[in-house]
Length: 215
Image (cartoon, rainbow, N blue to C red; front, side, top):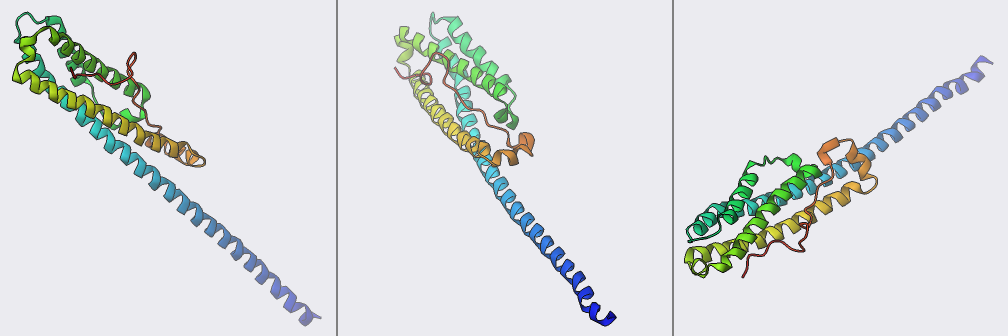
């Protein structure tokens, strides 16, 4: 009787071992699938995030170009007899505010800080626009080669700012759409501010388009 029960007793541990290995294989495969999915989502967010940062650099370049033109513009109009001092003073002060802003990559993930940046830049744009309108009353100034050159450069710069801002918003929208889609939104949440939602440029209050400098 002892020999008859031996095969069954021996088979039970083997079956348990087989089931255990099967469950382990399922778990390992599941972890591999989950890991592959996670890596794919992470790399996708990184790629879109880098595109946003690259486009942000283009926005900064365009704004910096405008800021660099301001000192020459102010000096040019100051040389015109009787030109309103408060007009070019407003431009100089707005330009100073732009220079005082501290920029870093966290700005892209902070809607409040981003809005302040845009407000300061919009203030400078508006001040320049008002100055150029005032120049209409000074035909001799308008006729100078230096001013005409500045006018062309400013017009081109404002157009470039508009284009780069639009491209930035498109890049930010692509990132935010991916980030907020399910289940990526759950995955992105584990990384905190690393994949935070990006801010957008908004239309300037009271204006449909960027400041115009063309006469």
